[in-house]
Length: 517
Image 1 (cartoon, rainbow, N blue to C red):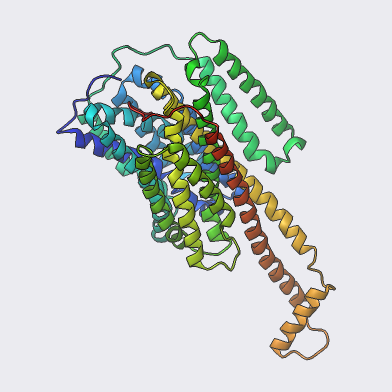
Image 2: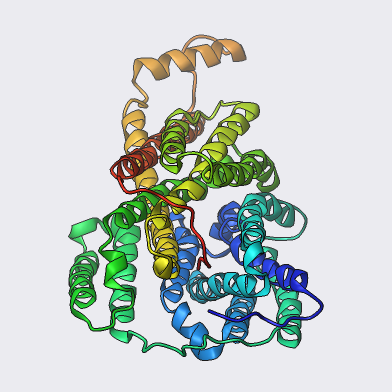
């Protein structure tokens, strides 16, 4: 992307403005999770519907990111950054005023596209602003925003909701984004590659976007629609198969596919890509469910849930930085496998009983944060470290697209497992709660004794119905706790699979140099 951007006073102005754009975009990957229970009430949505507020954001970002390299060469790097940021803040405003779930999902789709545009081109601008000898510093500045924003998202969302309302998690982006756009327009030079834009593979882009969309809809709506009993789900499965096969054929035979065949044909890269995909299913599925679990099972407020999650989130960012540095000195494969297995263990050991004390929930989340945060840097290095220098940009785009698609898939999968397991556990427990059962009779006798009620019939019909409703409510909470635990265990299996993928990589991994999209 040659050349050096002539910007304002110095490179630090570039770093500050680009970092602000990256920060608000990545903040919205986690700040929304904490307010999902509030959205469900305001938008008249259930868990099946509200999960799409998260899923569709990842999907929009993944689709846009596949085209951002070509877009940056046509419009210029500054103008592409402005386009992404402007789209992001406009859709933030629409999401804030959304009166219904369909409007919210439309806004989130295009908001995600804005994120998918501004983040990769923002990193390119950073590389242009800093001399080659300071590209590591530029990458560190990018990583600081990239790790800190998701870390503080849940807590910031809790604070905003506690003192204002959940819609302000979107409104807060608007004034910050507008100021950023104005300063970038005034200060940044609009550079393009000296080679000029390459022809864009519209067919490959359309096939890939269709396959991604069909996959996410199939996974996210399958449980709600009854899987293959639904004509809609069958249609999505057929569309996925057709578009997926067509995409494979096109990328195999096309003269100039969206991504070079030598990158997709490189076995170590494919294994690294698979590891990132599997890891992201675990991470984003867990991130989606945790705040909902804390609020709906334990009854914590949005702010309390955010504060419980804060230590783990901050240590996750620290772990990312530390393992990134260690991967330059030690074997990234060993680091990745160690932390992937630790992530799986954190999922399996996470306490989800409704009676779990707050300190233990915080400690469990710290363990998970340290484990999952330590994986992303070495896995990214593993995926890119076996590619030629000319392929780093395309490889990085594929890694990020994989992460985003897997984030959508992981969110949908986690919701599906949690809902189905909750129903199964509840039905199994509720089947034993009948008026004539020995357990209910014993419990009723104890309650009568405590209340000083004389022997004989204990409850009148109204009291019995109240007792039954209370008992079922308690069982539903406990069934949900069991379901969350089962779902976390399912998610942990994906991390084990990612560790196996890393283990299969035999090629020598080198330090990555050059801009990463």
